[in-house]
Amino acid sequence: MVFFRSVSLLTKLRNRAVQQPSLTNSVRWLQIQTSSDLDLHSQLKELIPEQQERLKKIKSDYGKVQLGNITVDMVLGGMRGMTGLLWETSLLDPDEGIRFRGLSIPECQKVLPAAKPGGEPLPEGLLWLLLTGKVPTKEQVDSLSKELRSRATIPDHVYKAIDALPVTAHPMTQFTTGVMALQVQSEFSKAYEKGIHKSKYWEPTYEDCLSLIAQVPAVAAYVYRRIYKNGERIPMDDSLDYGGNFAHMLGFDGPEMQELMRLYVTIHSDHEGGNVSAHTGHLVASALSDPYLSFAAALNGLAGPLHGLANQEVLLWIKSVVDECGENITKDQLKDYVWKTLNSGKVVPGFGHGVLRKTDPRYICQREFALKHLPDDPLFQLVSKLYDVVPPILTELGKVKNPWPNVDAHSGVLLNYYGLTEARYYTVLFGVSRAIGICSQLIWDRALGLALERPKSVTMEWLENHCKKSA
Ligand code: NMX
Ligand code: MLT
Image (cartoon, rainbow, N blue to C red):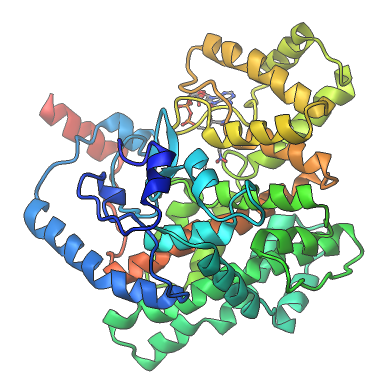
């Protein structure tokens, strides 16, 4: 990964198209957008044939090249380290963290259009980047914002489906129910029923994905308003962008909360393909299930405490620390609390990762946001203390591969500071963001004609016999 490290270089390249043969595979065709075409669909239509050819050539030239050895440990260890998926929109490096089409988070913060100069990236810009590999202009992002607003109306039956659940149902259950209720509008399902040719699959998938991305903030906001604000819905504001509107529909109109939401939605969107939610979405979609079915499945994976629910768990855990020891807890008291958590057989939420081996850059950019906007907040200071206290303890345990904080260790205190204090709701925010990454790749799954996912499984007996024979 050498290219585009330097954002100044990137900026210099801004006004001319750049085809970079030296880029790594995932970003070989990253370009700075120069076309003035405001239509994302036609941009994509132009890109698809060249990427189809590229994949065909990879298959024919390298189809038999080995990518590594599969060991018994990998099979028993949740397939860690096993390369087994194609995922074009982002790539995760264990030390450096995520790159979206080759761009790191700080690079995205510099080059993606913002609502105001120097502000946080607009998630619509990231969507354009994930789909096309090109950094869009502000005009293109504005046009995409407008298109998403035009697709954002929620059919009434969706609210009714959510209302059928007890208000005490977990927010993720209510959100996923809303997404499932949206499924009846699937263009892909209708087209498939009518017998659409497989070369055209990506077109109704694109329609579904854009509508789904457009609609999830309103569904999510309804879940929040239903549970915590007596069901009073706040209509969309046509003057606002995607992230700003989401904050607005939740009931937060402060400019800093809107900036936080833009950053939040951008950084949680995509984390390559192997994480539980993305992988689930991709797996279900590989059966040609439509984007609504696939994304609802992904959300059910995100709702697990080792994955997206960890953001809820972190804030609840931090609040339990404060309840027991107060906000001005010393580092020694904090160490005792961490040990107490570990000794009771629980994990320390927000720390560790299946792939990352350093502090998550998504944690770092949220920390920078906090240092800029809420440096004196007591819970932020507690999060900072945890950064000092937890990693040495996890290291001392001897088995934890990554003792450093992940994205979830920080998000809750930022939301809490701006008044979004209901921790049980936090995973829904993560889910809204993840629609952008999962749907972007899903469009490419269909455009590239990726295969039904069906790995081989074996029994313990099979493993024993196989290993004895090979010993
Ligand atoms: N606290 C306590 N123990 C931990 C932690 C932690 N934060 N992280 C890992 N371990 C344990 C893990 O449970 C396992 O123990 P055992 O062998 O007894 O089963 C051992 O260390 C080895 O695990 P790793 O190989 O380091 O981690 P793995 O890849 O299996 O799991 C996580 C990754 C993220 C599930 C794990 O680090 C964890 O449970 N973290 C806390 C929950 C969390 O923050 N999840 C959010 C991840 C990010 N996201 O948004 O999805
Ligand atoms: C994610 O964002 O999906 C999490 O960090 C988990 C992962 O990448 O495995």
